[in-house]
Length: 132
Image 1 (cartoon, one colour):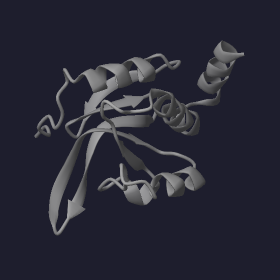
Image 2 (image 1 turned 135 degrees about the vertical axis):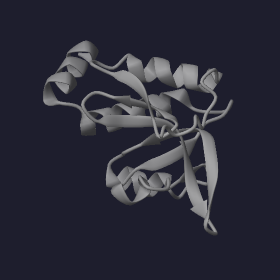
Image 3 (image 1 turned 45 degrees about the horizontal axis):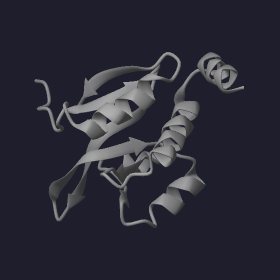
Image 4 (image 1 turned 30 degrees about the horizontal axis):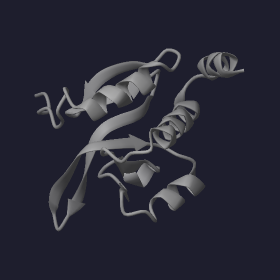
């Protein structure tokens, strides 16, 4: 049985995030557990997630979920806009709520860091060649 869709696929925030993610070499998008997931061989970013509060799930439908370096994860989690998502949090993933005040340069950096941590060396080399 498929998971219900948990986000607005027409969200302008998702549109902007999608453009960042799909610009990376070999990146594609799929729906995973009701959320857009951006991946190469492995997922490097999700749009939307939830946290478990008092036994119930609280949705963060307009958030970016990435796997940053552990030091970066710790720094992010000190900010009120960031959270440990249910299921993925124990594996080092962090959610960052996105809104009209979002710093999109920071989002691009977080997405790229997560991409570099999950993509094959060949794809990372292609990314580096683009930015050199």
